[in-house]
Length: 59
Image (cartoon, rainbow, N blue to C red; front, side, top):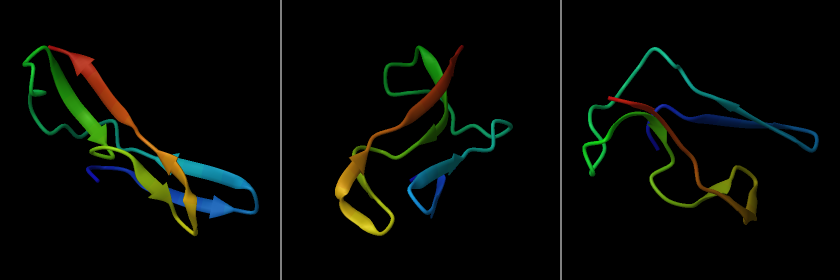
């Protein structure tokens, strides 16, 4: 994962992303990647629950 921190408190999933970071152009070149799970990943402590996240901005 890039710039994604997930925590669980009770039944609440909290996702933290630093919006001040970036990882350069997307593969298409149309946007700038800020954060990504880089595909579907399991939620911590809940292997049966998956999340896929991409955060980006236009170039």
